[in-house]
Structures are given as structure tokens and as C-alpha cells.
Image (cartoon, rainbow, N blue to C red; front, side):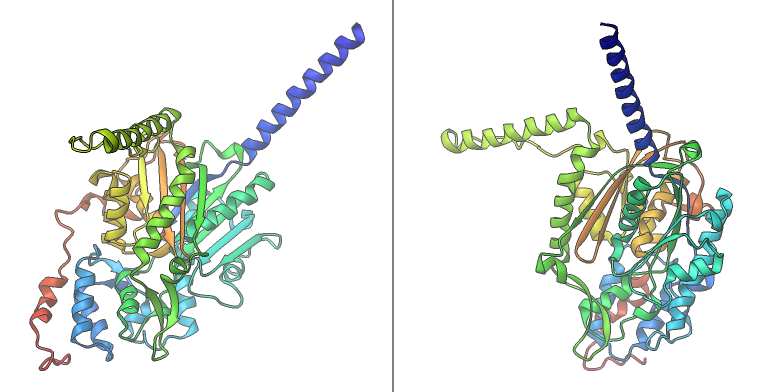
Length: 467
């Protein structure tokens, strides 16, 4: 009997040890954001209405119809007058870029944002264990990762990942890499660097599906410092709760809706097809199917199922025995606000923001951070999510325990999303610090129509772009 009791006690202690060890390992696999720094280029790179007109006028392949198309696009884009462009634009060499232009554009961002985020966190470059860089449309040898490692003299055992071609959703793909590495290695620091190189990617032709990207994309970037150290969780800003990636590359229409290619004259550019909204919607719906059960409370999921079943039952009942009866619609939408406090939406354009707002039943207050980011910084590709997050922080919206849903779209076609928990009250202005008091402005209407609206009345037979 004593032997049996002894074995029972040993078994219980062993079971408790295994449970404790499992909990401890799970805690070590957490992913925290310690700090992040968005990039604000210098004012001499700011793109105003007059300068935009000069750049467009330099393209001798454009005619009156293309001018009208571009005017309509930029007026309805939601982009303001304080966005930034690469330096090559200001020297008038956008149609003949050099490799050096793209590299210098990236290094200017690297040296600014990386140094700021590491200095503010009190972390030296030699303490970084993992480096992930995503710049979709610039591939160099050595890689951009290697350039950063060389500049900051990082350790020889650093693990580095250099991503290209991932598009505007690359930030969360990079984050997924960090999350998975953190599951295998304890007590590590990771540096995530996200941006886009515009210098070598200006389209100089007249294909409407390709000149549109010239209007939408602007310079920007962000450096994010992450860790899985339990000892630093009290210093963290955000804790990653879940991340879901959806890839529709197997669908030909989705694959080809957003692609880099040459036009019929051999000029390289970025093609945006008319099927893009449809592809985005499909990937968004599939992504929501997976992430919704992970982020919403059980009571909301039960409510949604009950209302959906009731709606279907009413359709069957009325269709069979009360065809003439008038019945008010039963709303069966999910209330995402039951599990999410803030929505961090990719600033792919006004239509993207509007579409997500309608799909998730969001208010203008919810959409304000994305709209203001689009207006102030434009579409900065994969880094745009962090500018939206910084706006929320600057407005002091982010309180301890709040949940933030990030949603991004990218070529492929991909939709990626993740949920963050705010670890402590946040209020630093980041890139918005000196100007947050000006937002939101009274109007988001840009002055392009006022300045160039006369083009709409021009006669193609007499129009002279040199006038």
C-alpha cells in the first residue's frame, strides 16, 4: 500500500511538472513588440500639387486622355499634399534609374529608423538575434539584410531573412517568420524592417493599368523591435495573440490582378487589373473565416450562428407558405467590435478602406486612422499598417487590454491579418508627434482638381501639353 501511495505521489508530481513545463514553454513563445519607429523623410522630398504636375508633364508618352485619367485617379485617391517621393524624382531621372538610387533610398530609411528604435529601447545592434527585411521590388547582392548587418556590425550568428516580391502584405509575413522562430528559441530579440523601393520602379509608359501605381505609392518604412523575453514583457507595447495568412495564388484571376510586367513597348511597370477588388474580397472573406473564431468571444459566435439559422429558416418558411408576405430583413453580420477595439487597415486606397468599413460595419471613428494615414503619407506599401497604428497611439486611443486587428492585402493575391493586445497605456506620437493636433483636418479634398481641372475642358485636337 505504501509503495502504491509513493508511486501515485510521484506520478502526480510528474504530471504537475509536465504541465508547469508546458505553460513555461508557451510563455517563452510569446511575441512582444518592444518599440517601433515609422520613417518620415525630410521635407525636401515632399510631393505637392505643383511638383506632381511637373513629374507627369515630363512623361512624353502621355496624352490628354491619360492626363484626364490620372487627374480623376488622384482626386479620388484620398492622398493629400504632404506625402513623400524618392530623391530620384526631384532630380528628374525617374525614367533612367540606377541601382544606386534604390540602395540609397533604402539606406536613408535604414539609418534613420533603425537607429532611433534601437536607441530608444536601449538595445545595441549586437544584441539582435534575428533580422527580417521585406522590400518587395528591390533585390540586391549582397542582400539588404547583409547591408544592415555590415553597417551595424551585427553578430556573425545572427539569423537573417530577406524577403522580396511579397507586396503590401509583407509586414505580417515577416512577423510570421519572427513568431515561428520565437517558438524554437528563447530569450531573443528580433528586428523587423519593412519598406518599399520606388526609385527603380517608376512607369514611364501610357498603359492605364500601370500608370495608376505612380499615383498611389509613396515613400515610407518602419523598423519594429520584437522579443520573446518574459523579463521584458512589462516594457512591451503589444503582445501578439494570433496571425492568419491567406494566399490565393492558385486562382489565375487573383494571381494576375496585381503583377509586375512589361507593357507592349517593353517598359517595366506594375499592373493593377480591374479584377483586383474581386480578388481582394475573396481573400478577405476566406481570411475572416479563419481568424474570426480566434478573436471573437464565444457568445458572439453563438449569436451569429443563431441569427444565421433564423434567417435561413425564415427564407424557407416564407418562400414556401408566405411568398406574398412582407418581412423586414434580419441582419446576420458578425459584430467584430465585440472582440476588437481598434482596426488597423492597410491604406491601399480610399476604396480599400471604404470596402473594409462596409464589410465589418465600422464607423468613421474606426476608419479615421487609416484615412488620415492615407491622406498624410499615402500608400507606403507594407509599412502602411505601422503608420496607422502610430496614429492611434498619437491620439491616445490605445489603452491596456485593448485589442487591435491588423488587416493587409498584397500581390499574389494575399490577405493577412493578426490581432494584438495592448500591454500598457500608450501615448507616444511616433511619426505623428509634431502634427497630430492638425488631424483630422476639416476636409480631405486635395487641390488637384482646383489646379488642373481645366484639363477636363480641353479639346484633344488642339491640346498641347507644352502649354
